[in-house]
Image (cartoon, rainbow, N blue to C red; front, side, top):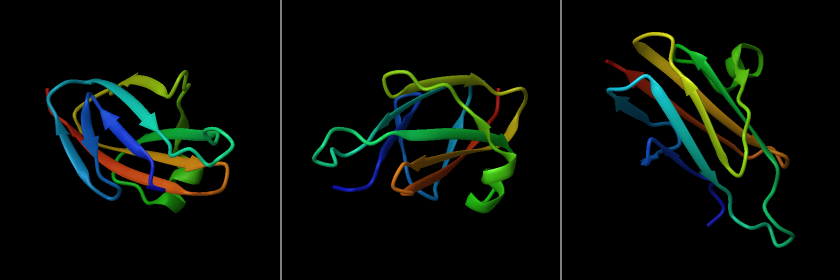
Length: 100
């Protein structure tokens, strides 16, 4: 298993997929496969709207991650993009639709 696992509000997210949420409080848990020398460092970004990986490099806001956990409050209803990139440049991108 080489793909990161991302849970959003305890729901497993798919790489390239979309989750529908009925809350604006977004809690993210990330689990990376062990690379043999411990878990690899990663960064997690989010942005409003449906973004591509290329757009996230400039539009994404960096989330503070502690123990594989991060959280943010969506400022309004609509689509959001979450983008994870590891130190070895593996990526995972998923979209959320928030409706309160």
